[in-house]
Length: 233
Image (cartoon, rainbow, N blue to C red; front, side):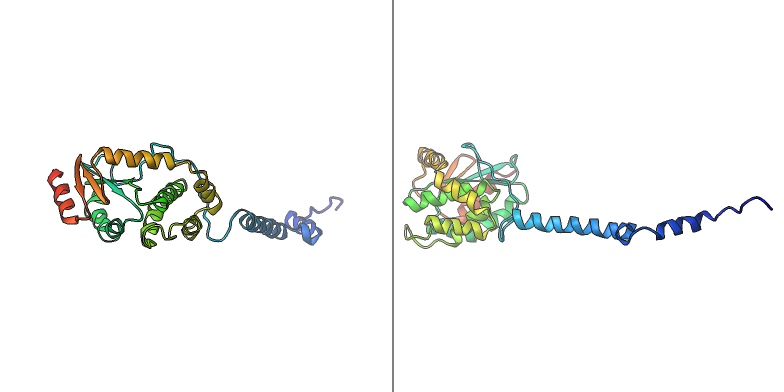
């Protein structure tokens, strides 16, 4: 017979494939590309991250920023005026704030707004500024709690600027951005305005609370709770 036999296509493909150099084999290429991607990712992380830091965007918060917790439409709004060097404020933050959160804020019945009443000296002002610098990175409340946990008397160095930066670093904030914010003093006017505002509303000691417009002085949780309950439906 003069007609030539046709070659089996499958055998032909196998034969052709087997002649490719090892480094051009499909499986080898896939592994190599995957390795390059992994190495690139590792290098990226090594360059752009540091231990203890997270990928947070730093943005100035503005003079109208209000640190608040709870539903903005809650039937009761509580404004707390406090100084970070005030022992009674620290006691309230540690003992009673968690109760307010559990009993009222998480249930949508109370909105809590924090205001600075920084009247106990320079470290009170620095601490208040530092909390707002933490707010630029979304860390206000964590920093707020950190300050009260590290309170050590009035103007004794507990809230020195190096310590304030250390607190930020321990919370995983970007220390360089935080330091730059703190050194700039850009929230000093806001803190002074809050002090004047508090005085205009009758605040003369800390902590003080304004519950739906009514002033309550001192860390008297029972009195505060009684007033909150009186405004609830």
